[in-house]
Length: 224
View (cartoon, rainbow, N blue to C red):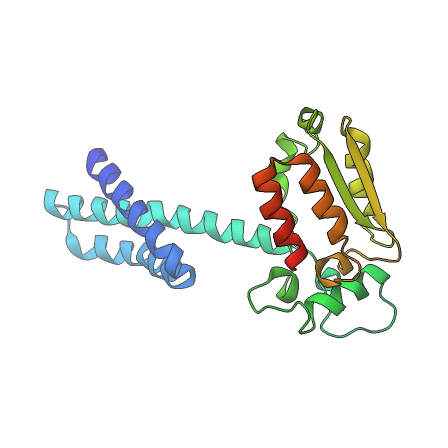
């Protein structure tokens, strides 16, 4: 009976996993309803070996997936409640009291300038659990190992993220260069062609890449 229970549970868990990926709510309701049907099944099957095996098999089919669906619900709930609150998402309309970086993001991600229906930044927010994997390896841990290859960091003078580039510059080994673009915000360097230092990029690639690759890269940069 234990073997029967184990086999049916494993098979059912596999099937439940596939179903949960397609329809979590429907799968959850299906398996939860099975738990409530078990007492009825036991009442009408009697005490024979066959009826007991049937009940054990049914219990195995329903028992494991109920835990699996429960875990999925918990994880979904945690992910939801740890996600940025509504006020920290890019608002659908500006109220006039937002920080400048929120205004900058709104002017890019919420307008035709940068909106896309599938963009997280246009339609939602990153969750608080999204960057947990970085806890095991801070991003700047091995930045010194880029040397002796050159590093060029570019940031807008008005970018709220400017300190990211400044911290990376401090952590990097020579040769390195930090270029600050006057009066440019974080998103200005996405698409403001007058602010993006194409000449600097072309020079950097020409000086530091192999000639054939550098020429192709420089031509591509200048073409834009």
